[in-house]
Image (cartoon, rainbow, N blue to C red; front, side, top):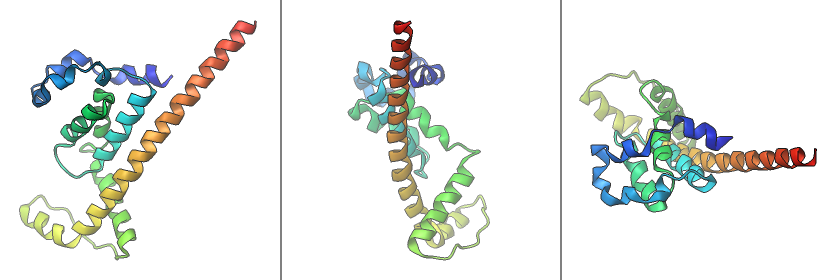
Length: 172
């Protein structure tokens, strides 16, 4: 079940190989393991994607690809999972990460109002920045591990269920 569901959402690997943004990886993209979908490659890719989704940087997909390639996990799934944080989900996810950082550092939450300016960004880096970065780091590790082990467990349960169903059909 997970394999069929995941394959429906993944783009064609030939289209991905042709992307100019990924040309910096050169012939490394020709490794068949990067495009194969099995329990190990899917779980690893999902964990990597979730890990980098919580990094507050603009090039998360490149980072996910750069780690997926040497670990030989599914590249499209790794890059696609990063998009859990998108322009619509970033505010609540990053606010949650900030609150996690506040709790870990034992601080009181600062009231802030987002402004699209360099001045606000610089001032925020000094005031809410440490709690935000600690929260992002903790959330990245936590959700990366939960994603890895969660998908691995879901895959195993699905395979066992399919085997049991096959055995029950053979008995009849």
